[in-house]
Image 1 (cartoon, rainbow, N blue to C red):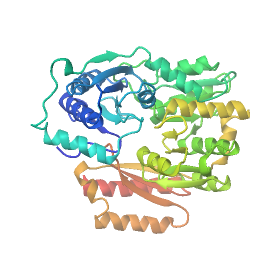
Image 2: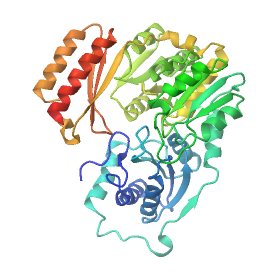
Image 3: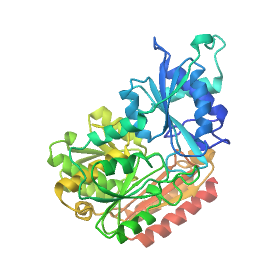
Image 4: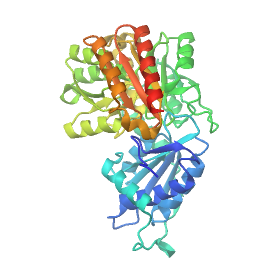
Amino acid sequence: MGKLFGTDGVRGIANYELTAKLAFDLGRAGASVLTHELDHKPKILVGKDTRLSGDMLECALAAGICSIGAQVVLLGVIPTPAVAHLVRKYGADAGVVISASHNSFEYNGIKFFNAQGYKLNDEIEAKIEEIILGGPSEDELPPTGDGVGHIVRSKDALRDYIAFAKSTIDCTLDGLNIVVDCSNGANYQAAPETFRSLGAAVSVLADVPNGININADCGSTHMKKLCEHVKSAALPSVGIAFDGDADRMLAVDENGEVVNGDEIMMIAGKYLKEQGCLADNTIVATVMSNLGFTIAAKEQGISVKQTSVGDRYVLECMIANGYTLGGEESGHIIFLEHNTTGDGLVSALLLLSIIKKTGKTLSELRKIVKILPQVLVNARVKNENKSELGKHPVILQSIAQLEAELAGCGRVLIRPSGTEPLVRVMLEGSDRDTLEAKARSLADAIEQLLA
C-alpha cells in the first residue's frame, strides 16, 4: 500500500480503493493519534455528504473510532465547513468528513479536522499512516467493557450550522432573487433554508440527492444549467453554485455569466479593504489564480501572496502571517475571521451582503477584474509516474519552449493532481484558441510519456 493521504485527505473509488477496512483503520489510527494525550473520553464528530457509499464508510469509520474508546457523534449529511465549525462549538476533540468533494459519486474520501477545526498537517497525517501501514502495536491493549466507545446522533447540527452562517453577515437579503444549485450534495438543505430565512426569493436546482447524482451535471463544476436558469429568470437574479461537500462556491451574475473564485475574492477584498477589515491589505491565492486577478489587486492597492495549489497551503500562509482572506480560483475561499476552512455558504452570504449593501449588481462589481483567457487540460497518467513530471527531459523541453513563446504575455503551469491520476496543464495568455491547441498538444505528450 502506498501513501494514503493526498492534498485533501484519503480519497479513492469507494469499496475498491477506499474500502470499509481502510475506513475502519483510518478511524482507529486517526482517533488514536488525535486523542492520545487526552485525560478524558474523546469525542469525535463525523459528517458526510450524500454519496451512496457514505453509509458504509460512516459505519466502518465509527467502528474504528469506537475501538479506541472514543465517543462518536454522527452529524448526518452536512457541509464540510459545518464540521470544522461544530468541532469548536461542541468542544469536540476532532472531526471527520466522509466526502470526495467535487468528484463523481463512485469516489469517496475521508478527511480529519483537529480540535481547533483545522485540517491535519503532513506530520500528523504521516503518524496516522504509520499506524495503519505498521498495524496495531502489540503493547497496546484495546479497551474492553465500559472502555469501548459508543455512538450518538446529533439532532441539532444542521440548525446550529445555519445559525452560525447567518451570524456572519449583518443584513437581510430582502429584495434579492437567488437561484441556488446545491449539486445534489451536502448543502441541499442548509443553503436554501438560510437564504429564505434571510428574506431572499429563492429558486433551487439539484436539491434531490439520490446517492448517485451528486455533482452530476450540476454544481460548481458544471455551471451551464445554472447560467441558463439565471439568464432566463423573470427578474434579475444571482446564481450560487456549491460543490458536493459545499466548501466551494461560484456565482453567476444577472446576465448568466460565471463569476469565479478570483473575482469573488477580489470583490470581497476590495469591500473589506474599504471597511478597514482586510488584514494587511493582503489576499492569499495560489499559483493557479489568473494573471488578471494579480493586475486588479495591484490597481486596488491590495497585495497578493501566492502559494502552491491546495487550500491547505493557502491556510498555512494565512495563519503564519495573520491574513484573513484567501482562496482558489475554483471557489474554495477562506474567510478566516469566520471559519477555519473554505465555507461555500459563508462565502455566498458575504458576497450577497456586498451586493445588498452596495446596491450594485454582480456584473458591476466584477468589472474590477479582467480575466485573461486561461486553458486547463488534464493529462491522464499513472499515479506512480507523477514523480517523473519534473525530471523527464522531453516534457521539460516542451515546457521551456512554451514559456519562451508566452514570455511577457502569459504563463505555463504544469502540476500533478493531488487527488486523481491526472497532470493538469494550464496555459494563460491573450488568445484562447492558440492556448487550447498548445495545451492539448502538451497534455497529449505527457499522456504518451507517463501513462
